[in-house]
Every structure is written in structure tokens, then in C-alpha cells.
Image 1: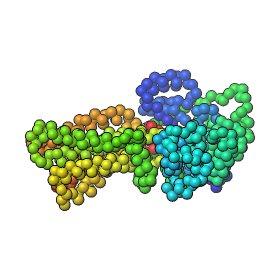
Image 2: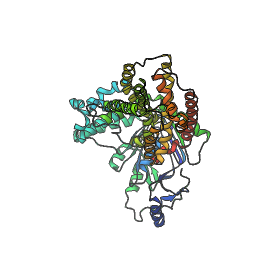
Image 3: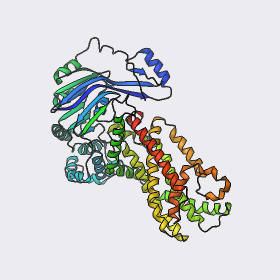
Image 4: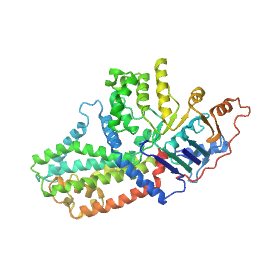
Length: 264
Length: 281
């Protein structure tokens, strides 16, 4: 069953800063990476994705690879429904959960329990659902009485445990992850990995962007290589990772300069 | 909310404009946003809590400043306007309470979406969620200040009458005004960041052109100086029932006309620009 279908997707980000025009002259003039074009309304456009088409089916575990700025995070954000395509079409069936920022909504002055409820609401759970999973989360984080204290007293590792514990108790059909985060010391990292894998296995489709090829090899059966906002290669994880990691003699062929159109 | 939808179907927006599809999506957004009350009540509350966190008096600071304002200004202006009427202090109290809410809508409207940039960029939300959060937060603030004003009213012998029942439609009109302003100003303010500074200066100016400290009658033949100000009518729609008095004849016709106009504009703009909001942040 097709769960995600993307056709001819293009995403343009407008830049409205004063002075963007002079920046435009320089960037377009130098033809740098060819991904910055001018809109018809005087302002600068950054083309984050173009001509992206792909289909993911039930059981696909997709790894996104590519250098910084290749469009991995943008693609995840589009699949999450955050940005509507400038052109093209995106279809995602089922409940989508995007764990792009797992500590979104957490508040320094609230205690651990309050933060569990806030995060839970944002993840789409009702109060009753959170209540029923509370014990599981509390046990996982091993934070004990610390959960009574405001978040500001937590160490970075403890925060991560809490955020991770809450964010991994959901059961979406489509799970979108930007960089898998290890949590805490070695013993805990082991436990976190098991919990993450359990959640990922329940999802029909997993899409994960990462620079860590070990994680991708372990988690994924498919991979998508993005370069300059376009799909450079797609296929099985081994194939793509092999090509991606191969020392490239001529680097990537320079993309054609994009001519962006119609911002609003 | 990211898990609220079971089918996400997004198509290119570049040339969509006011197509039938964009109207339908705007309507779906409104329905999803309004029904997701668990999220907007939480966001609205957290915003209030965040503002007053670890302050001993919390939101009472605003109530306190409101009481001080009403007290001293009534003293001064009663002399200035020669308004020795026993109704003057309750009039100012009821006016100022209502005005505080209108001013908050104008001041905070441009931040409706900008203020939640981190949320909007990390998760999918119905955009109207944040409009509801603004309205909810200000309703909570209003109810927080209300008891003080009620005490002032009762103290000066202003008791509820049958007209007080009009408080319900009056409040609903004020909340609708807030929702439309939050939507319109929120979108424009996300695209053009100067708007927040503009509305702040506008509020300062409007304060004098709204009958808050004085009654419209004081102006006599010069009342046209303030009659153009639509917020004056919304003010009267809430203040008159608070005072147990009938609203002025023009109040409800103007309120309804303004709401229809603003509502239409807000929905049309939302249909057209809703997909652009996250790009503007």
C-alpha cells in the first residue's frame, strides 16, 4: 500500500530581509550553487526542493542522506504538513508524527509531570491517553522524584531523557525523524535505542534524516540521496550509502541555475 | 496538531489563489482549529503563566494597575470634565475593562502567528489554533479583572437590570472581533513586521478617540470626531450592559456591520494566504 506519494515537489522560501536585493545580485551574479533565484516580486527566493518525486509503501524504512542544505529537513517538514508545496503534490495517508524537535513546548519553569502533559497534548494525545502512559514514561526516564522539580534544575542529559521518553510513547502510522538522538550514558543509550526501535517498528513508514550511516544501515531498508534540493539517487540503503560515501572525483555536477517563479 | 489528520493531501499553492480548493482548505482549518480546544486552551494558559512566572502577584499586577488607573483618573477627570455624576467612576471602570481587551487584540494581533514561530515551524497545526489561543487568553484576562470592576459597580450602586443580559451577545461580539483581528493582523503582521509597531501607536491614539474617560454626549456637535471609530461601538456593546443600561441606538447595527465586513475579509484573506503563513515566519 502506498503511504506517501510525492510528485514534482518544489519548495521555494522567500527572503524578505531588507538588503536581500543586494544579496541577490551577488548570489545570482556568482551563480554560486544555482539554487537562488529572483522572484517576480523583487524578493529573493531560495529553492529548497525541486522536482522531487518518490513513493513510499507500507514497510518502507527510508533514510535521507545528503550534505548540509541538501533539503533533507525541508522534505521532512513538507511530509509533516508544515510547508505546503509551492508546486507539485504531496499525499500522506495515516497519522503522521514528526519528531523534528522533541523538546518543543517544554517549559523551564514547569515540573517534569507538567511537561509530560504539555508535550503529550502537542503530540496529539488526550489527557486520558497521557494519564494511561504516564507510568511507562516515568519508568523509562528513571527521573523519579526529579519529576516534581522544575525543568530548569535538570541537566542536559536529564532533559533529553524526559523529552525522549514522552516523544517515543506515540504510535503513528508515519514517523518522521530528523537525526536520531542518543540519550544519556551508555546504559541508557542502549535502552533508548530499544525504545526508539520499538516505536519505529510499529510505524508503517519511517523516514529518517541522518548523517550517521551506521544508524541508517541498522534502521533503514531504503535510502534517498538529496543534493541541492534534488534527488541524486534512490535505492536500497547499501547501494545509496556506498555511492554517497564513495570519494567523488568530480564532486557533484553543478546544478543548473534555478529560475524561481511566483512567490506571494 | 500533527496527528489530527489521517489524510494529508497538499498540492502546489503557487497558482491556486482563490480557487474552490483554497476556500475548502481554509474552512477545514477553521474547523480543525476550533475543535482542537485542548491545544489552544493549553497554549493560551501557558502564555499567561509564562508571562507571570515567579512573580508573586502575577496577573494581579495588571488588575492592580487597572484599579489604580480607574481610581486616580476618575478623580482627575471628574474635575476636568465637571462630571460630578455618581455614575462616572463605574462608567470609567466598565469602559476601561472593555478597552483593555480591545487594546490587547490590536497589540497582540500582529503576533498571533509570529509569536509561535517555533511551534509552527516544527509541527503541523491548524493555523486557526493560534487565533483561538489569542481569544482564549484575553477572555481569561477579562474574567480575571472582572470581579474588581463588579465590586466598583456595586459599590457605587450600579445594579444589574434586564439590560445586563445583553452582556452575553456583547461579549460574543467582542470575542468575534478579537478572532477576526487576530487572523487579519496575524497574517499581515507575519509578512510585514512593521505592523506590530503601527498598531501599538494606533492604540495609544485610539484611546483618546474612544469614549472611555468621557461620554460621547460631552462632545455635543463635535461627536463626529469619534463616531468614525468602530471600536467605540464594541465598547458600548459591553459597557452598557455592565452598567445595566440600554446600548446606544447605533451600537448594534454598527457592531453587526463591522463584524460581517471584517469576518468576510478575514476569511477571504485566510483562504488566499493560509498556506503562506509558515513561509513568512
